[in-house]
Length: 616
Image (cartoon, rainbow, N blue to C red; front, side, top):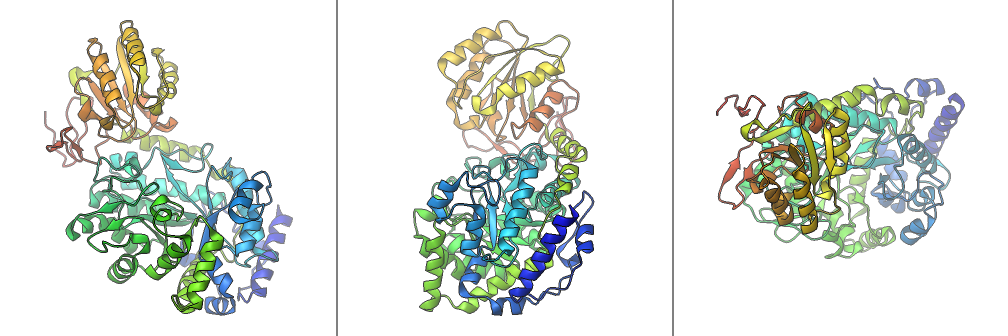
């Protein structure tokens, strides 16, 4: 390993110096001692760099400056992988990830599972180091890359097991515990750093105030601005011990009924309501967040004409001038339909820069994006000085984070950090603490593992086939009836009702049943058998309002292994249920609130209220 580390460091320093980057001399021995370990932590202020950023910017061509502002995904599992050459050719006109970096002088890359980047942690480490080699080789930008990913935990996690599986942000929100939030951030940041990733596009700071929100939901930590602010800051501090965190989606995507992947959402609330959605972002700014990601939503209270991503009123007037953010602003992915259905690639790139964004993220047509920005500079629509502002921010950030001098990740660190026993225990603790019992009529729960035969059924999208064997392993006698899809068929409902005759209790896994009549009908039919029906609400926590016949409802906020392992412990009574609702549950008819923020029941039969009082 020493020979490889020495080779890489020498190449990094030589190429940077050749590009006019005034780096302090660093010996190979120093490089070896700074390889990431499970205890390595570093904030931006701790990275000592003598890089002259102004000189770097002055030495760059226009193409290099635009390249630094362009961060996009690449197809392949290693820098020179040709197995997905057709996809790279179709989008970029070259064959390998390394060639994409070099063609555009990229400032950053973005990892996805579907683009072949995240098969396993060791492979990710190799891809990251290989792409840094490509950036620093002849023909590359000569500047180390930002290596980025959406690793929120829960529903959005691009690297799966053996990386630590977290139960998700709303599960974290149900704990109301800043210590666990800090620990979650530490897990995310340390594991990403070991894999050579230096930016996490997390945490989500959106307030999920709209139960019909199709895109945020359990990605949010809740609906209460104060709670999300506290948990968000704690998570940011944990992440930024290791890598950069990114607060998203500014100025708040939590009260929309349109998914910006598929359309352009608009929020019509007043400025006072907007101010509540801004509180977690202000708290993040005050805590020193490195980056903020924009939302492709129109916020009428600020700019009724343009979405936040393209609005100077939102990004410059509100975020920079009013809220005082001086870090890096990145767009959300520009290939989302909220953008592509309404603007050409050239238009959206130019408008985003005019609005105040520093990063053009995942443009659907990078060639057109670069050409559009170059033309805007040529005709005076954008000044090169404006580009210099963004490039200066990016390079200053890379210097402070130590990326310019230490771009590589030690492969030996992956096995000791990623998916460590300590991290797995913490994830399980978050899941246990998140279990939220919102109904327990006749003290149906916990079930008796010694006597209760259990039927496991449910919406296929809630993965009942994952829960059933885990209950069997715990000792329950388990029968299953399964069907794919979110909406149980009439035939499936009939099979389940027939099977219920031979068991002591029914466990039904639901997935956003508030908007699914078929799930509602199946639970009602099962309840009509007279057998106790336990609903595990495996995604958004509102399902209790459409299951009046269910004897017990337990919210798990996810159907991952870590979530369902905690569900089994709760159903069996191995743990008590201490989770509390991080959002309010409305009545099904919309006439008011059914259950408030902070509600949750213990097996003692008493609600666990956020204000510390108990009420029967």
